[in-house]
Structures are given as C-alpha cells and as structure tokens.
Image 1 (cartoon, rainbow, N blue to C red):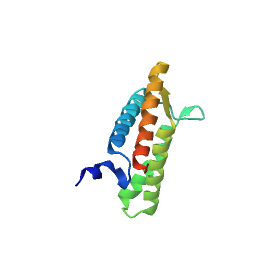
Image 2: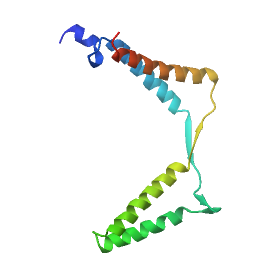
Image 3: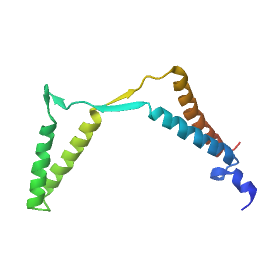
Image 4: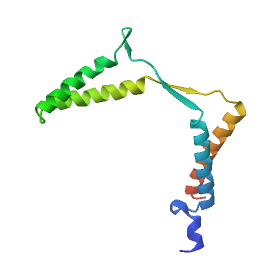
Length: 127
C-alpha cells in the first residue's frame, strides 16, 4: 500500500482528508439538527372517538385463526393487514416539531450538514 492510494477514496483522485472532514462535518451537523427535533404522538381519532382499539379487532381474529390453524391464509392475511394498519397509524399520528433555537445555531447546523455532504461528494468525484 502506497501513500498515493490514500489520496483516492472510491477509486477517484479525490482526497481522503476531504472525505473524513466532510464526514465529521455531516455527522456533527446532522446530530445537532436532529437533537433539536421533538417527536410527540397524537390520538387515533375517527369520527371523534379514539379508534386504536378498533384497529386491534382484526389482529385478535387473525391471531385466533393462526393459533387454531397455523396454515390459515385468512388468519395470516388478517395479522399482516393489522400490523400494517397499526404501524402506519403510529407513523401518521406522530407530530414532529423543531425546538426554538437561535438563527445562528440553525445556520451553523445547516452549514455543517450541507457542507459536509458537499465535501464528501467532492472527495469521491475526480478533480
């Protein structure tokens, strides 16, 4: 392994130092940005009522069919559809907020993140 091999990340003529500086910048900017985000959940409302329990009914029947007959196609379909509905319901009811922060901190976060991605791209492109 020669020293010239260290200057070519991804087989290009880009610099390995640019790559690692960009990686550190992108990771630190991404961490700072994500640490300012708050995720909360809402309620499963349908017609004004909490409908989470209603989404469990097909799951209960599906599990009962599968325990009665492990090869029951109807049971497995009910279980699969119920799991999809429950997972999508949880995701659709998430509320994501960006915590208040100063403009300077926001600019620093975005410059670190976008600049790091730019340096990574520059390092793997031939120049």
